[in-house]
Length: 338
Image 1 (spheres, rainbow, N blue to C red):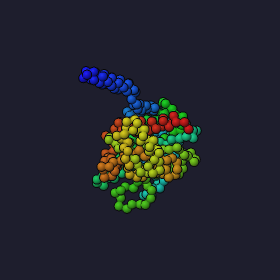
Image 2 (tube, rainbow, N blue to C red; image 1 turned 30 degrees about the vertical axis):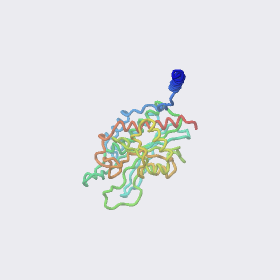
Image 3 (tube, rainbow, N blue to C red; image 1 turned 180 degrees about the vertical axis):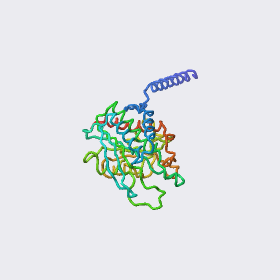
Image 4 (cartoon, rainbow, N blue to C red; image 1 turned 90 degrees about the vertical axis):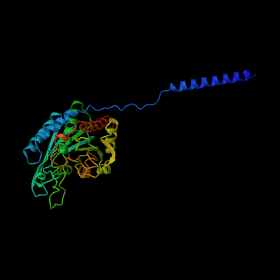
């Protein structure tokens, strides 16, 4: 009786075990949903090429308006954009600055597909600061900076993007502008500060008198100090206030490309920069990609507005992260139906 009682029970246990194993076996053959790795659609950004463009600018010397280095570098930038297939426009004007002196400005503009109404604006400043006012000692403070990061890095990235646009054209409109006289604000070391807007003079002039009447772009991207080692691009305040959708385009693409360690999901300060007049004159809602620090007294990299802003600070990895991200935004936008 025990055997007769036990036997059916054993059969039931074995049958249940086989059913369980069978069910587990069935479950194990089901495909597990795994997100596919992001597929980059833009051409590969060449960081070595961008580095050389930065190096070439710095080799002219400080690009201070009314200097030989400024004139020669301006000719170089114009020639490179033309070489890379852009339709060229230059703006020349004289402005009265804080010290009462008249200064010439030269905005350099390269246009791709100028007849297309859908446009993206990419811009950086190409002048360098005539005062190293973050140095110690009056003699050092009065010397011009090389501006490898502050100026040349953004221009170098945009030149490489222009080169790529020639090799793999897009159908939408792209405007690349190198703004002049961004960095000749009154030195902080001056005892008497003159009231007025003395920064971003070239972009303010263009925003009021654009190269095309009633110019408007879908959005703009400003590159400022985008070459430093261990750069941290936080979400700048005015960009978030006026163009949060543009910030999202950039930061989300950077994350998908694996550059989240550069493009941090953190808020940064409000920076007076070339994007501000562009936004205020409603030429393009714009985001500022700028190296913002949380552990320095100025909020910028330690070499900012010092004589140390030279090629030693330029990192190809940072140039790559910024350039590839901006290119991915452009080529993604180009593939989006209007």
